[in-house]
Length: 178
Image 1: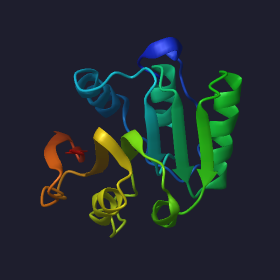
Image 2 (image 1 turned 135 degrees about the vertical axis):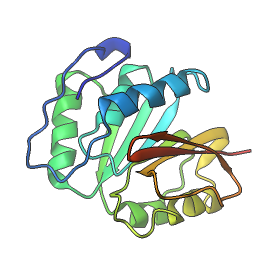
Image 3 (image 1 turned 90 degrees about the horizontal axis):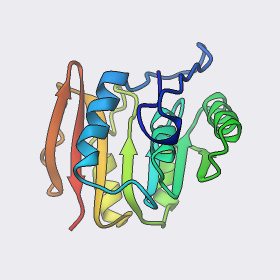
């Protein structure tokens, strides 16, 4: 796992092997950020990273100049790893919350430019994530929600759905706010 762009480009991340995660692969992450390069300006955006795990995506956004990155995961070990890595590389814009993501979304009121969600693939409520985010108006106008999920899963029935990109067994579904 490595950071592929920004001030920390090339940094290898070596999280403990006992973390309860399935990190986004470098190939899929590189493809995702190539897509995002054509859709958003990274500097000064506000990002919400749900099911942040190792913080791989949070660190990538921070490396590229996001002004605020809120990372939410229920694993205290993941939160500690991300906090330690952020401190070590002076990424003060990353804020972490140890919480169940679906409960966190029920109380969140801030709006974001980008929301990235990488839930466990066996989570039954994956289709609920876009529904909750749009019902609660958590995206700024023109904002983008990206949900990583199994390629066999179809999230296209949500009205804000834009496209799905497949990378092997993983897919990214993109949703845009009006």
